[in-house]
Structures are given as C-alpha cells and as structure tokens.
Amino acid sequence: MGRATVLPIKELQGTEAISARFRHHRFAPRFHATYVVGITTAGAERSWVRGAWHMATAGTISIYNPGEVHRSETAPGAACWHYQAIYPGEPLMAQIAADLGWSGAPRFASLTVDDPALYRSFGAAFAVVCKPGVALEKQTQFITALAHLIQRHATPATQAAPAALEPFAIARVRRFLEAAPACNADLDELAAIAGLSPCYLLRAFRRAVGLTPAAYQAKLRVDLACRLLRAGENAAAVAEQARFCDQSHLNRVFKRHIGATPGQYRRGFL
Image: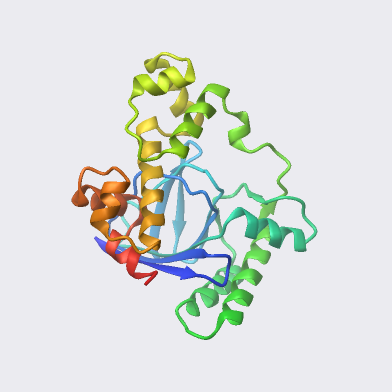
C-alpha cells in the first residue's frame, strides 16, 4: 500500500527523483544503471544486498552503487516507509568527483550513513524539486549535497567494476539481453550463447549477477517500459512493445520495480 511520485530533474542531466510513501511494500530484486541516494523521512526500510540485511531508519541516507542488486522493503515492525531518492548517473557523479580532484566515478562502501547535516542538505534539495523557475537553485542544492556525499563517504574508483570480473560467458548473455530486452529467448538459447548447459548457466548467472536470467530480463523490460513512457507512449502500447503479457502484467511488474504504476510514472513527464 502507498504511492510513489516520479520527479524528473531535467536541470541535472535528466536525473530522476522519486518521492514515496508506503505502509507495507516490497520491491522485486532489482538494480539500477545509476546511483541511488535516498533519505528515509519516516518509518524504516530494510534491504538485502551484498549477502546481508541492512536497515535504514528515519533520518539516515541510503546509497547504492550502479548495478548493485538489492531487494528493499518496509522493515519488519515499522508502521511505514517514506523516502525520497535521486538517481544520478555515473557521468554526473564522475564530473562532480573530478571537480573535487578525484579520478573516475566514486564508489560507496557503506549502504547507510548517519550524517544529520547531509540529511538536511538533501532534504532542502528535495524541497525545491517541484518548484517552477528555480533551475539554478535545484542544481546548486543537489550538486552541493552530492559533492558533500562524495567527500565524506565515497572512495575513489580504483577497483575494477563488477562486470569486468564476470566470467566472459555470463557477460555475453548479459550483452545479448541488454541489446534486445523484449526478445523471447529461452534458457536453451541463452545457454548456447554462453556455451554452457542450461542448468550450469542458471547457477553461474545468479552467482555472478545476483539475479536469475529471467529476473534480469524483467528488470531490463521495466527499464525499456520507462523509456517508452517518457517518450509519451501509452501503457497498452508499452506493454506490447516491452513484451509483457498484457497491460495488467505490466502494471504488476512495473509497480514491483518502480513503486509507481506506469500511468503515475508517465504523468511525471507530461
């Protein structure tokens, strides 16, 4: 139960933000191509990531690196989970880091940080997201907050990205699915691309990526649906183009990944 509102921030290289108010909600296991920086404004969240549960309570900041698989939900015993989050891309974060004298996009070891001053900075930034005619203020607030986040809580990008450490066979399957998220390939076809048996591919893919091939494809189809909705397509057309069974199937899967319905998401870009 609850509602999530998508808030485009065109002034920040097309960055998206979201404001969500849930009572009891559980997202599907997912990942983002961008960073996720969120503040918990009420209640509590718990996330399964990096092989363990992590808690984020009201007043704390949650951070996920690009590509980091996680499963988030209202924390057990919590009455609600309200949060606001921004999804800055790697180019933006690398640019901010470069201005600080860093090389490459930063990485965050801590998933949750307790930094009251920084929490207030992000809160102030989110307060102006919906205000018209304040482009400079939005840019100033968010870039300042992200710069402080990097300075205080990030580490330089000195390690290879996780994808570079994946077995080559799994990387081939990922590239195939990413190139054609709406394709109807079965496990036998993916196994042939990888040069592995279907059973072994299932185990190896989940070990390397953190999701099964089917779950990975579902997330890619949701990402495709987001792009189509931002382009103005209606939900029925999106369901067909992104290869969902029907519009109700799209609604269910989209809500589990995004926290909003396709219609709610589309209205944020009209």
